[in-house]
Length: 304
Image (cartoon, rainbow, N blue to C red):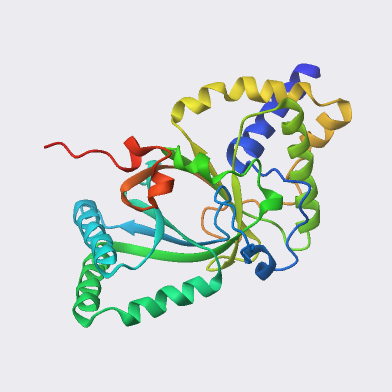
């Protein structure tokens, strides 16, 4: 029975931590509404994840990735030319559909999204025409495109530190739907796992975002940065350390974790689903301060 429980625990934690990774900064209460979660503080913490993500998921036509990449490079160059500030991290699938691209575009507030639109309107006509042309070239390579807007949930994140993303080369994500009416129970489960992780001092970091538009109600996305796939080598030992912190009641609770709160195989395409992405610095646009944490990756020197 004890061995069976241990195997069951390992499986649950692989789903909960490896796939969901939902753990809470328990000192912070859940946001009362999306506006509260997204409101930028008076003195922004440079180590904090962005309050808002504009997420674009693009499926590129077969054979069109090279042309798509070239078009994205032109779009980013036009942003630079027009001096339009944008913070975006590009991801391509490392495992799965090789034609998928995801762009995580960061904003400090919803007002900042309006400001970006206004800056486009003030750009010189020739720059606007150039940008429209390059964006049309990019869109011509899309088989499909989906956009979502999500707000950061610090209460459902674990050891959130944006500098970890700057040092990453891969990103593991888990998109899932919390059953309506079970949000409080879900947050409590996240808090329970967070407590166990704290006791085991597991060096994991992830950020949870709640989708407020572009996906079914109750959709959450967990984003876990990784330095490399070698990060997974330590997973078994980390799960064992986590298991050692639990008493019989804790094991029993872990046994039932997420069973009632996360919707299985319903509500959205391939939900819940975990994906592994490679960060694409050539299609990203990050600040010099962000890039300075891993300059060889974000600002590689071009070979002469």
